[in-house]
Image 1 (cartoon, rainbow, N blue to C red):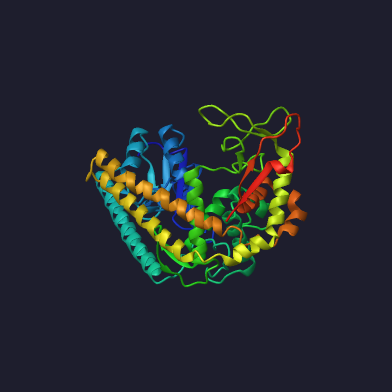
Image 2: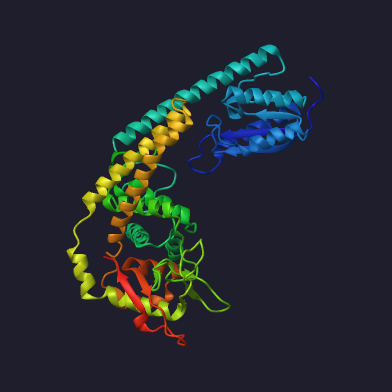
Length: 467
C-alpha cells in the first residue's frame, strides 16, 4: 500500500429519512470515523446525501462534490459504510472506478463488507455486489410500484411525508377551515382571478400553507388541478376511480377548473397590470377592441390603427372616470333583480360539462398516442403533422366550449353582494376587481365623445352584460 492518506473523505447516504433527523447517515459517519482512527487516516471532510436514493438516478449533490474533489486531488482516500451506500447502479460504480483510477486514488475502504478494490479478485467482488444491489433495488421498485397501483385501484390515498392541504394527518378527514379556504380559492379562479392574486389574498389574510411557507402561484395551480380534492384517486397522472375520502369540491367544479386553466393557456391571457377594463372595451366607431395606452401621467384606452391592431384610430377615452362608471354599474348589476332572475332561470350545465370533459380527455389521449407512435418510428413527420391538425383543432374547440360553460357559473358566489363589494372595493387588488367585472360584464361599447369635452359622459358607455 502507498503512504497513509492525509485527506480522507467520508461518504454517507440513506434513501429515506421519514423523520428528518438524519440519524441513519449520522451512524454511518460515526462508524467511518472509528475506522479512520483505527487505520490512522486523517479525515478531511464529510460528504452526506440524506434522503436520496442511489438507484433512482436523481442527482446526489454531495456525491458529485466527492467525485469533483477526487478528480482535483482535494482528497486521497474514501471511507464508506457499505458499497450500497456509495452506489446501487453498476454503471455508476464503473464511473466511480474510472475517477479514482485517473486520480490514482488507491485507498477506498468499507466498514461493512471489507471489499478491496485494489486487487483483481476484490474488484470482481465489488462489481458482483453492485449488480446484486441493483437487482435488489429493481425488485423493490417493482414491488412498491405494484403496491401503489393496487392502493390506487382500491381508492386508498397516496401518503407522502406532508399531508395535503384541506385534510388532516390521516390524509382522509377533511379539515373544515382549510376546506372552506380551498373552496374560496376555486371560486376566485373560476371567477377569472389569477393564481397570483389568490396567493396574495392568502398571504395577506394569514392563511398558512401546510408547512407554514408563503403561498405561490404554482402551488395553488397544482392544488386546484389535483383530482383528489374532487374525491378522485389518480395514479401516474390518470384518474383510476373514486377515492376513499370525502371530497372538498364536486367533480363538476373540478372539470370547470381544468377548463379554466386550459382556456387561459390557449388564449395566453394575462392578469391586468394597471387597467381595470383590459380586454373589455370596444370602439363605438369601428367595433375594434380598445387598448391601454398611457400618456405621461394619464391612463387612457385607445382604438389603435395599423396592421397589428386593425382599429380606426379615432377614439380615445380617459381611463379613471370610465372605470369608475363601469365598476359602479357592475356592482349595481350584482344586486339587480334581473341578474338574480337570470341566475335562477339558468339550467344546470353539469351534464354538458361532463360530456365535453370526456371528449377533451379522449382527444388528449389520442394526441399522446400519436406522439408516441412518431417517437417509436411507426409514422413519419408528415404523417404525424397531418394526423395532429384535426386533433389539435378538436382540443381547441372543446376547450373553448368548456370555458364558455365555466364562465356561466362564475357569478354564482357574487350575486347579491354588490353593496358589500362596494364598501370593500378600494381594498381589493386590481386582479380581483377585474375578475369581478369580467364575471358580470361581457364588454362595453364606447361611443365617440363630443368635440372639446374631455370628461366621460354616461351616455357614451353601453355595457353588454354576461348572459
